[in-house]
Length: 214
Image (cartoon, rainbow, N blue to C red; front, side):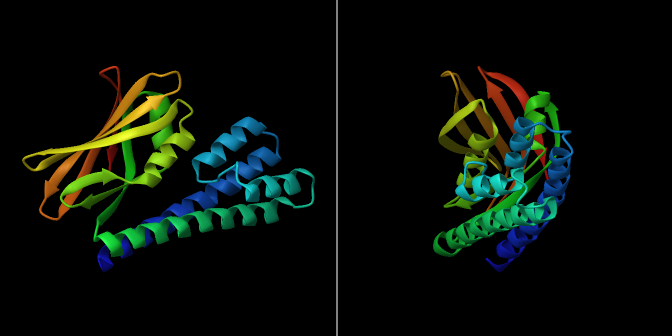
């Protein structure tokens, strides 16, 4: 349990550092009129800012009207990211304590296939956990997928099965317009442990992209 919490904290620190640098760069590009408003909001959404939240809307209005300078705006956005990560960490720790789950976070390593899908998954990590011998994708990842992929309407269900020392966790996705897609998480399975290898994203039975993790 302590080891899982340490690993979780380590990855969240890395995630925050990366987000911090990305926020500063994106804000400077928008401030200098290199990015338009639509591209800017789409980009900061990908690094964890909820642009529909009251905090962000109020903050952005103050920045746009000149009440806040860019440095103050950077610092305020960083606090929004910190609060998001702290909430995420608290939720995961509560799950670990109450359900004795084995939780793991995997970072994007490389991607083959659709450039659009590869670009999406280059921005973030994926969280999986083991419970009662089954492997599941976290609800945080489901929410991230819906928030960041404009083609995804909702995640409908998860299906787990194993074969020997290999596991397969499939998330079924409903796309805008009624089409369907799925993500197949594959990896190795051991007693009370697992390792994620890759994710195949398919639509109509055709693999659109394969993402490898580490």
